Length: 366
Ligand code: MRU
Image (cartoon, rainbow, N blue to C red):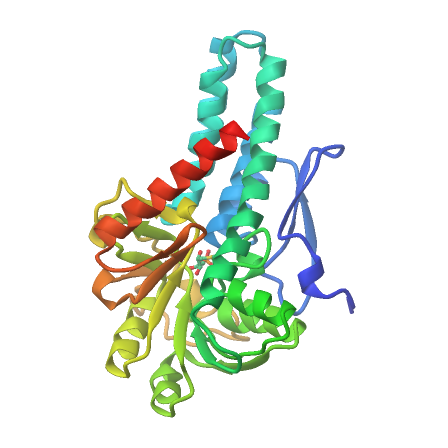
C-alpha cells in the first residue's frame, strides 16, 4: 500500500537524465499508484490513447515532452534531414486522440519552435525544444492557479458544487481547472461540498476526482451520472463546475460525455453552470460545437471494462462517444486564466485573447 498522498505526485514529470516521461498510470487508480517511465514513442502514443495520461492540459504537456524526445533521437545534421522525421513524429502523436485541442496546440507550438529556428544547428534546435516543453508545463501550472483564483470568486464557503469527469490535478500539471478553485479554497481554509458524477464508462469521477478530493480532505459525495437531477432537486448544488477539451469560438464547450445533459439540468433547476479551462483549450479556429471531432471509443469500455464478467449480451450494438458539447446559451461563464468570459462568447472570448496578448507583450518588455 502506497502511503504517499496522490496530490504529492507530478501528473506528468520529465526525467532528463533518463530521457523518460514519468506518469502515474491513471487506469490503475485508485487501487494502485503505478509510475510509468516512458521512453518509446509507441508507448507514449498508447499512454494517451489508453488514458494512462488524460485530461486536455495534461495531454498537451505530455505530448510536448514526447515530441522533444522524438526530436532528441533524430540523427541528423541538416534541417531537411531533421524536419521530415520530426514532422512525422508530430503527426503520429497527434493521431492518438482527436478531441482535446491541447494536444495539437502543444505539438504545433513545438513544431513552430523548430521552424522559427531552422537557421540554427540541430543541437541548438533540440535544446530549444526541451526549453519549450518545460515552458508549456510551467505555464500550465500558472494557468490552473489563475483559473482557481478566478473560479473562487464565484463561490462562497460551504457551497455545494457538482462536477463531472476529472478536471483536477490528475488532468493537468497542478490544481486542475474545474477543481482548482476547490483545491485553492482549501489552501485558504475554505471548504466545499463536492458531488462527483462517477462518469461512465471510464469512471474518471469515481476513480480520480473522488480520489484526489478525498486525499485533500474535501467533503466529497460520489453519485452515479443519472442521480444529478435528484441531487439538484434536493437543493444541494449551488454551482456546476466542469472542465473542457475544446471550446469553440462561439463558446460551445466540449467536455466528457454527459456534460451537455448536466447543463440542461442545471438550466432547469436554475443553477449556474461554469466551464473552467485555460486559453490553451479554447480553439478560435473552430467556429461552433458541431465542428468538433468527437472521439468514438471501443465498445468494450461500455460492455465489460470494470466488470468481473461482461455485462451486456454479445452482439449488442454500442454507441460510445467520449465527449459531447454544451450549447453556449447554457453556460453562465467560461473561467480562464485571463478572467471570466460571459455571453455573448463570440465577443468575450476575443477579449480574453486580447488580454493574453497584452500580457505577453508586457512580459516581453520586463
Ligand atoms: O477522456 P478524458 O479523461 O481525457 O476526458 C477528460 C475531460 O473530459 C476533462 O474534463 C477535460 O479534459 C478537462 S481536464 C482539465
